[in-house]
Length: 317
Image 1: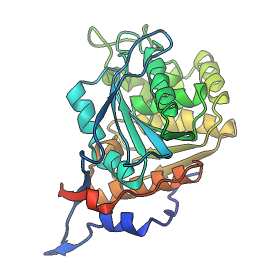
Image 2: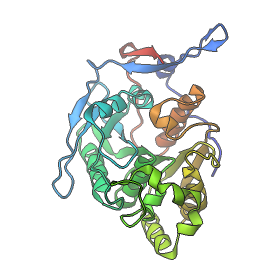
Image 3: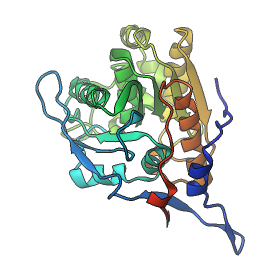
């Protein structure tokens, strides 16, 4: 259902480590947690897909031998991300907050699907990352959460339709991909597809959501067994109008199928504000993290224990 939910109580040590709400000349100081890389190194991972393709990504874990819950953090877009950009995602605002809270954080990339948006390789690489994390000796495989924004949100939904995970968080998912509507036959402005090529579909969802694509999306949705949290800015935000498609197609189909669904709206926020860790109101970024953490804790068997606050510094944004 729409709206915001109450945050679960935070561990006092973790709350202190994240507390940055002091006032200076009427302005709130804004910071993010920087977690020591001596204590929590940035480790390279190479998940292997079912076709033998060796993927790439980064992982950070809390100190100790575990067991820990984990979150697989999927970037958006249609293409493979560069190593240095992946590393920056793993050190990002909300990824760092999950690490500080006591989650293992894995940030993989995936093979591009900009030649054929329906190519299964991005999904297969995302599934490989999830299975890789589940297989780590210090991770509780029943406590793995998948998060993604935009194209990554679409992949989070695809993973949920193909694998057992505790829950997923999809921030403004590009679900027109899951529905099959953007495909190799769709018009494109360049040699390869870009997110901008989906604009006509987002502008007029019902025109494109034909019986063929209805069957495709409903079949995939029927396979989802885990709870779903959808995060979004304003439903009617014009740029990009991705939430219009979700409001008219994805969310009604999830509800009609009886899936466990929560939708949280953060007025005025930009696309992927939670992934980027920045927006018009930074408090919304912090709240979105808290909402995700609270949601995940309801479905993971192993609850996170915040890491020692001495390992965390607050860095001004």
